Length: 267
Image 1 (cartoon, one colour):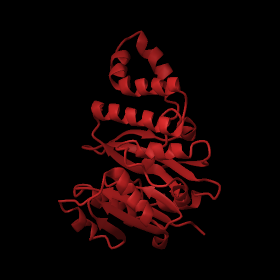
Image 2: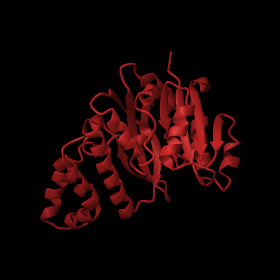
Image 3: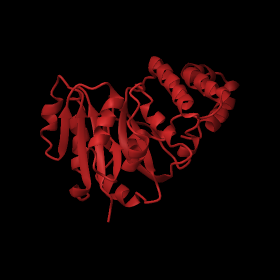
């Protein structure tokens, strides 16, 4: 018998995108009794909840929260499924057969299972890149390599490691992975699970904040030595602008591409 799945969608003023997220769940060709869908809304001021009410399958709450980590934790505490998927309000399941196939892939000998994510341009909806591979989990000590929108986590993992840390505003999912680093069992299936949108433009400010939080997550959980943590902090902080310069240099470009493939092999 297939396990039950709880989908958690956090939202705040998401009227432009959440309907597509909810529709992608309703359209799934699997037994609806195996799916529980929670919308955790942060007290939206727009029509988000009015739209959610059009989808009878969805359970929801709408109240002020303390940020994304708090919203994730609220969802986890309400989940009753064997496994949990976080499907944000601007993401959508890749096709109508995703959950039917994934539910048959979820194994008793895994704590975390994951597939692939297509990142699409927010304006054109055209694919920009696809992330997620069988080696990804092995490189979590470096940075966040497991694609969160395509990750299914056993509910007992949260019972063991607790709520998301509210002091993390961006890298809360990475910090949660590191709590079980070296002890968790991962299973990869080569299947696109989710399509997520991006603006297609690097947000340098957010990148620096995320790098600092990843550094703090490693330090909190005792991952790597001080030199390793500092290297990855520097790499993640400077990577976007440095890449643009080096790739445009005829002699350095090919050498950098080769080195970059080794450094980012987790993707």
